[in-house]
Each structure stands twice: as C-alpha cells, then as structure tokens.
Image (cartoon, rainbow, N blue to C red):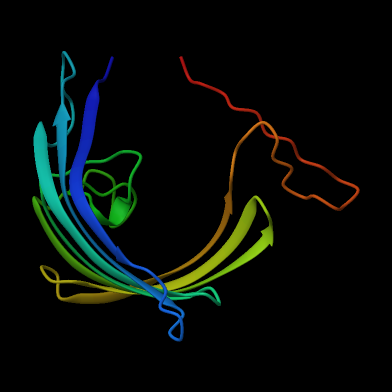
Length: 169
C-alpha cells in the first residue's frame, strides 16, 4: 500500500478585461508540498517541496502568454507535471533523480471553443533547466471538456457523447 500527499497553498490575482484593451492578466504563486506516508516507503524521497510562480496574459480571441518559474527540492507528484519532479519518470531513465530542480517556462497558447462544453488548446512551451544548462521545449494539444450530467460534447451533430460524474471510492 502507498499513501502519498501532495498539497498546495497559494495566492492568485487577476486584472479583468478593460473596455478598450481586451486582455486579462493574472499572477499566481504557490507553495507545494509532498510527503510519503506509506508504511514501507519506497520512493527516492520521503518529503519535499517547491515554489511555483506564474504570470499570465490572455486575450478574448483565445491567445495567451505565460511565464513561470519552478524551484523544487525532493519533490514528487505522480499525477502532476513530470518536468518539475525530482525523480525522472522516463528520461534519461527511470530511477534517475535530481534533488533540486530550477526551471523557467515560457508558454504561447491558443484556445478555441468547439462546443459550449469543450475547448481545443494548442501550446508551445520552451523551458530552461538552470542546473543542467538546457533549453528544451514541449508542444501540446489538449481537449478540455466540462463534465456534468447535462453536457453533450458534440452537440448539434448526429453523435452525442454523454458524460456522467463518477466518484472514485
């Protein structure tokens, strides 16, 4: 049996769209925490933490820019962003670890609503790894959808996908 806690506490501030300047700005900062409460811990680290700071700009047309900084120590988040973890899940190999991680991300996004309950998002994200002196990038395509009992993903077509809320035990 494995019991892992990931927690976060933070602050977020938004500046709404101004009448003649249709852009929304936000800034966020979080302290994140990891701890392995398993009876027989078998991870590289028993506990760790990190700081995540991000500023965002998004237009009404769906374009957005983000700049983020991550600094973590002994941080593991099995269901989170694998880049910020102190333990590699794939590259360079499973079992590889870096106690301290310092990364800077710059993201360019475009979002397009394809139905009232679904949005397609494309983003490009160069990031810099300070410790390893590496500049790398990621390209992402996401389908974001709202789950509720009344949502139909493809409304107006002959195919309807209906989602129901499921609560894990």
